[in-house]
Structures are given as C-alpha cells and as structure tokens.
Image (cartoon, rainbow, N blue to C red; front, side, top):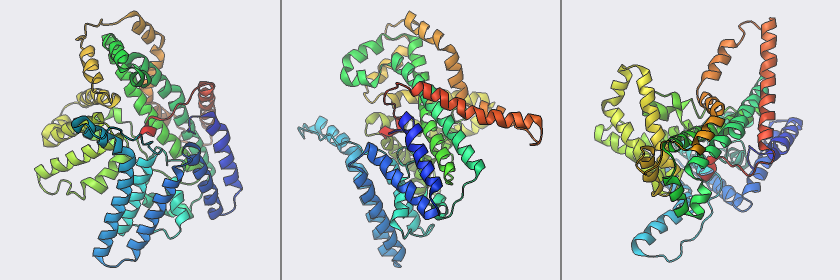
Amino acid sequence: MVFSSLLFVYAFLPICMLIYALARGIKAKNIVLLVFSLLFYTWGEPVYVLLLLFMTFADWLFALLIDKTGKNAGRKILIILTCIVNLGILGVFKYTGFFLGNVQSIFGVPSIIPDIVLPIGISFYTFQLLSYVIDVYRKEVPAQKNFFWLLLYSSLFHQCIAGPIVRYSDVEKEILSRRTSYHEITKGISRFAVGLAKKSVLANMCGTLSDTLLVSDSLINSNAAEALMELSSQSVAGLWMGVLFYMLQIYLDFSAYSDMAIGMGLMVGFHFKENFDYPYTAKSVTDFWRRWHISLGSFFRDYVYIPLGGNRKGAVRTYFNILVVWLLTGLWHGASWNFVLWGLFFCIFLIIEKIGLLKLINKIPSVFGRIYLLVVVFFGWILFRFSDFRFIPVVLKGMFAQNGNSLIDFETRTLLTSNFIFVIIAIIAVTPLVKFISERLKPKKNKTAYAVIYHVVSAIIPVILLLLSTIMLVGDSYNPFLYFQF
C-alpha cells in the first residue's frame, strides 16, 4: 500500500483517523496509530515486519542497558554493538548482492548470488533507531522504558517507509503529550492534498515523459541491448528534455512523500521537520545539500561528519571527512556503483566550493550561482538515473549530438508541444512562487470580506487537488515513490 493509492486515501487513512478521533486518551490514540502502522507495513511486507519488530526490540534493549550503565567503557561497548547489529542487518539485506556481484566479476566466485529482497523502508527506520540509541548514549534523550512507544516511533506509517528520518528527540514529548487543534488538522489535510497532487498529477507524469525519452527501467532490465540502441538514436532535444523531466520527477516525487508525511503528522499532533526547502533555487552545491533531503543530510552531519572531526582538524582531514560522508551517502541511496559515482561527483564540487569557489559565488550576482547549481545537479541526476554504466556515456554523447543523432525528431517535437503547459506548471511547482503568492495574498485582517473569500478559496483548493489526484489515480497501476527502492 502506498500513500498515492485510492485504497489508502479513501479507506485506510479515513478509517484510521476516525478510530483515532474516537479513542479516549493519548495512550489509546497511540495504540490505534501503532496497530494501523503495523497493518500498513504488513500489507507490503508480511514477513519483514518481524525484522522491524526485532530491530526495534534490540535497540530498545540496547538503549535501556546504555542508560543504566554508568561506566564509560561499558557504554562504549554497548554503542559499538548497537552499530554492528543495525548496520550489519542493513548491510546483509542491502549490500550482500552488490558485494558478491563484484567479487564474482573479479574472481569468478560464487557461482550463484542470492537474490535478497530489500525490506521496505529499512534504510529509514534503521537510521531512526540508530540515531535514537546514539542520542541516549550521548545523554541527549532518556531511554524509552515502554517498548511499544518506541515501536510506534520506528513504525509510524506516516514516515516509516520513505522518510523523513525523524529524530526521537523531535517527537519524544509528543509521543505521550500532544494535542491537535482544528487549525493544525486542516493544515495537515491541506499539506497532504498538496503532496498527493505533486505525486499523482505531476511526478507520475514527469516520470512517464522521462521514461518515454530516456527508456524505462523495465526495458533496460528486460532487454538492455535494445534499450541502448533506442537511447543512442534519441534526438538531442529528446535527451535534454528526458533528463529535465527526470530532474523534475525526482524532486516532485521525493518532496511529495515528505509533504504527505508531514501533513498526516499534523493531523494527529506530530510535528515533523521540513525535509525539502526548494533546493533547485539554491545558489551553490553546498546550499543545495542544505535544502535537499534535509533529514538525511543532518543525520550524516551529526552522526558521521562531526564525530570524524568535521572541519576542526585542518583542511586535509576536512576533505577526507567530506569524502567519507559522500561515499556513504551514495551507498545509502543504493547498492550500485552509479550511486557511489554520484556521491563522489557531488563530493568534488563540495570540496572545490570549500577551497574557495563558494567565496567567489557569493560575490557574483546570485543568478550565476543558480545557473551553475542547476547545471551541476542536472548532470548529476544522469549518474543517479542509470545503474548500468553503459547508458551514461550514451546519454552524455547524445546530448551533444555525438551519437549521429538528430537535433530533434517528430516524436519529440510532438511530445513537447502537447505537454508545453504541463512543463511550465511542473517547473513552477519546484519553486517557491506559489508559496510566495499565497503569502502575499494572505489577508492582514480576518474580519473582512476579502478574508472570508481567501479562507473559502483556501478550503476549496485541497478539495480540488484531491479530486484531480483521484482522477489521475483511477485505473492507474502501482506507482510507488522513488525512495521506496532505497
């Protein structure tokens, strides 16, 4: 089950919210959320829900032991064991095939590589649980005595599957003492509707257009040779627009999930932090990564970069620490060399900016910084898009007419002409323009005719977005969020 499905929107979520509203007391409401969260996860992973339960129990136990252990040596041993268990389990499920595949390509063994299914959301809930135990070790939060409340934190269906990565410290108090108001519920519903529309109306369409121009993953997986031939014959304009559509899709898809998670959290009194801050309007790569997947970036900053020494031990050590973080960031996104290359690609630009480029960017008009950022990110997504390295040079050469391909063909021209208005809308959607206009139009006084009209329109817009999303989802096939694969 995914958020962008009619089953979830019109059955699972309304039933959950109804029973939640009828439940008396915060503990009863928590039980409702916990039961529905486990049902939600079990729907997609009937077996691996046991893994989620085991990892939560192990971390609950580790945190209690750390909290009760007074000796520093004992606490260090326990936190090391915690890291080994969590990262070991994540490594087995996510990287065994990748590691054995590379060994096989070099040494010819093993003859058979096991096909291990990646549990949904394991990268997210592993990091959440790990951050919780580390924070207990650092004495930043107390250990949660009740296993079921920690399980609620790790399995909450709002964000368990694809983020944002929520820190326990951010929701610790709200687990047992939160309140909801009419204003926050309506705000949450509106945020959910925006996210649903971003996914079902914009991201899915961008994905379809990108697959049409860049060949789909299904064709690559079924017949790579045919996919390569098709891609090499694509026109220059088709390749540039295909990457642009993917660039739009990946932001709209990722941020849509966070919008929906944040919105559902508000409906029940949880306040999750923002995970995206219009990253395509950034002025540098450094600025971009402060705005893109903020929860993941802050995790690596607080639990990897700073413990390694951050920028406190000289320039060389700083660059090494950045390299480690971005190797891990690339690998976190997927067990494939293209993700490693993608991480190193951004690592190079971040180091160059730290050496001195960032100072130059800050001195020149911001428009040049934004163009520079968009160019870097545009080509970075090509590395992210293709796990098979053979496709990357084909795309890059074709974008500059080095495959013997035409500048534009009839199919590409027709596709772009018929979707021109959609492209404009999608581009606007990745900028803060709508938010800016909404804030400027917001009435300064509530007791006016204009204020009444404004609030009525504000109430109608989520309904319209929900109807548009429903129309797009009727008869639609399974359309998971891109981050499900991570």
